[in-house]
Length: 193
Length: 79
Image (cartoon, rainbow over all chains, first blue to last red):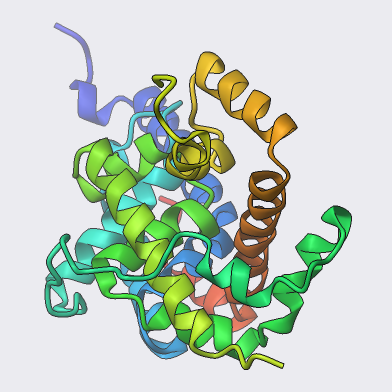
């Protein structure tokens, strides 16, 4: 029989402490990234800050359930999106089949002034920054969350599917519809000159 | 894709995974070969790509230092 039980073994305790500290440091390094996603999932800065704080409190308590070497960003975002649902922040469910009547390139056609190919990317500058933020917030929540994860969070479709616990095909269809809705909202802000 | 399909309609369908770099190599080559020939799709793709970057930069709000400090305080005290 060993002198100390496994839990009381000083070497083991020191090893666990090192693992925990490393986990907390790595998680904190990702905080800015986590916040950027959170900020566009909820309406206000205060809500986003509360959500991130709650996410980190939970993550630090549950650090042992994280598998080192796997995607820590995705793991944190999974906690965050679940908390967002738990706290009732998810808006009324919108059916995936919401009708989208705008054509894929309608916004481009509206902004296009026949610019040379190399200048096409400057057309977006005709959209005000406020209009873009407002248009994104007008996209129904479960379409917006995939846009935010992929376009702002820079997650792959696979990561987004795991974070939201939905099939990858659903990620793709929500992304497609969400971006169409976003463009429809933006289109409404463009005045034809 | 069959020869009866409109190549631009197909291009529209694969626009999203192409820009998200989620196509297989074969699909990507097919898309690029169409883009090399179709001026409208090429301009539309460039616009869509710039729109994503614009949305990303416009909607990315940095965290306040106060929150960063609060998160650091959540760390478990050393034993």
